[in-house]
Image (tube, one colour):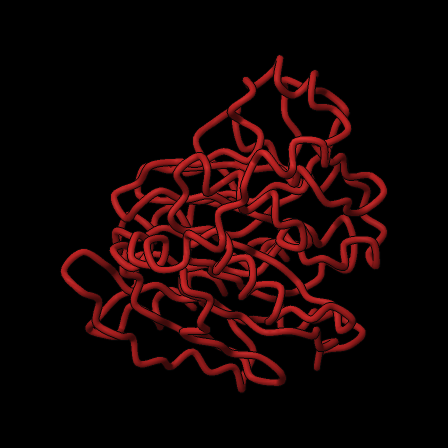
Length: 315
């Protein structure tokens, strides 16, 4: 279960009639020490995710959308254990998620009628030998959205979609690159890690109708993350929900290695609505009010909408 000292207590805000409460997590993740320990580590990380959800749902106002950090089953420090990508990558498409390693989380989504976000190293039968770092959304219906990292580069053995656009489009269709999905809680898109540093990625999602961008991540000290995320939400007029890893816990270091940054919820006017960072662990929550998106666009759109005629030659 989640390590001692990790607090998940949070007073969830009530949402307006057209909105809902959401939460972003800042949690540790267990690093598999070897290939032989991979299955057991994933099982324990899954138990920790479900435990975190159960704690959140004890509040009378339960969140409908919960964003976890990246790689919550395996950790971003996979290379420390020397586990090859072919062993750790997950096939999200060949069978329902409730039949695989994500079954406990999907069951919790069904139990609480909520949506849960994280990422995984991914392999697909459509592109054998190619590995992605994929953000995905689970819900009561199983897999709701998968969005491999398209813009930013990742580990050396992870492919960015920017390098295989023709092949990926043939396999999955052109709309599968940075997709948006309609759900009962709104239109959702996903950015993974450093993709949020490129404004065009968020603008593309917004142009496809995204109202909420979920952003499972891990943060580096050298990036001014708060400014980047506020600008992203404000200039595209979307809610941006970022969740960051707090610690990577290894067998050789049970206290864990702390990561930088903060898990944040930012409104479509660029204001930080909730945040948890530093050496704090647990969750931060805010009410998502979809009507605020159109209000922000009306108020600020004259300044934030790019004039296409000026930028046609930019790319």
